[in-house]
Picture 1 (cartoon, helix red, strand yellow):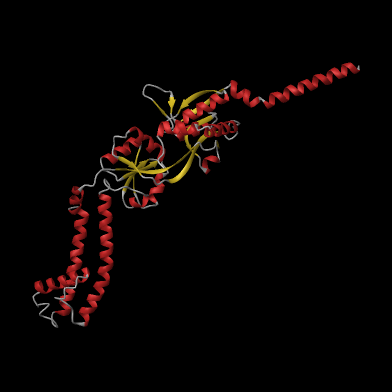
Picture 2 (cartoon, rainbow, N blue to C red):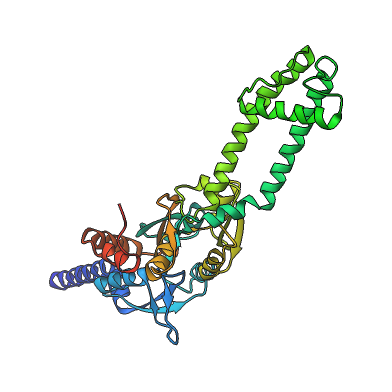
Length: 368
């Protein structure tokens, strides 16, 4: 009876140990033997396909394949045209992981789990460079806006000159004759001399009213002249941006800038009073910049870097300033058990400088 009891207890212990061992290894065995459904979406250089091929390529794809090889995972790709479509499939349980430049946001974290960021992205500015052009200055002198500004300025000078003539013509007829053409002409001359602080002394108001007008005009002209000079200098500088670099977003204030539809850059640009033009693809944005229909492109920095690396013969320059930094990561269902292993592999790839090598292959070396 007792030996039989011991045998039963021994059998139960073996069964318990086997069950415990199975639970401890369940994650790795499932991941190793099952085929993971891997969605891929985004834009170059993180995800793209060659013509006549559905095989995905890019930064995100290479990083994922290194992780899968290390973990001994089997997987099958499913290509998506857009990140929102892929996230919808992930949310419906049709995917095990989504690979691509998936922006990690607080809103998305509510519905998905994310790996740690494998790349820190940001918004950047690309503009057309070239040599300083005298012809651009000549064209500016005959531009519609400048002609309007000069016209308004001449009207103001005429009004001030007329006020001088009305105030001084009786008390000082030798300086301001009763003839309107000559009198107002002398008044305009006095307004110009006063504004420029030249002070020839050939004309000067002698009445109290005339001196009040002159004093008021001095203050107004100093303020308006300073603003006018600053405005003209700004226009001259930006109209020759083929010889001047763009260092920050403030230089694009009031200018026309193109970006991609649905990009976070739209809201960012509107905060700086910038005229936003949206297009569907980066190539469309490049065409608008080439044809000088816009003054610059503002979009995700790595995508712009990738384009510039592959089109070094084109006269484009990227500003060093970066804005609206955000992390790219891999997305998983809320209850996924893959995240820990992926994060560990990402850390190892980073420590071994393997991710940096992938970035340099696609984007080139970063300038310090």
